[in-house]
Image 1 (cartoon, rainbow, N blue to C red):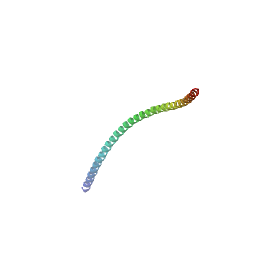
Image 2: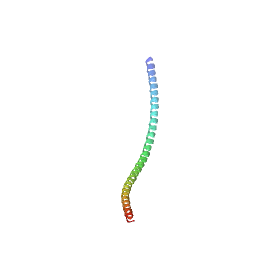
Image 3: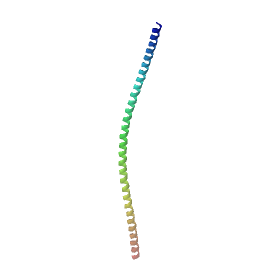
Image 4: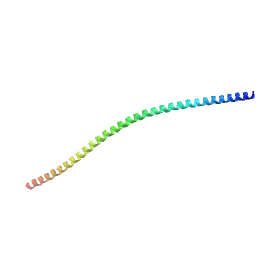
Length: 110
């Protein structure tokens, strides 16, 4: 009789312990599941943000390429204008010399 009582008592304690552990593990599982859902949502949001910024970056890089091309065109134009300016200065200096020579000739004739 004492053996049966001891057996049933131990069996009840084991069942209570297993029920408590079952509920504890179930709670941990639910908490982990919620955490995983939140992480998945955060990852999805992060992926969307990365796509958005990637598109913006590609547009910006495209704009930089266009601006670089325009800058190179302007540099070439500036080089051309400088060369023309130098030529015009030389021609102007030559014309000034010719004018002075002609003025000297005119004064010599007067």
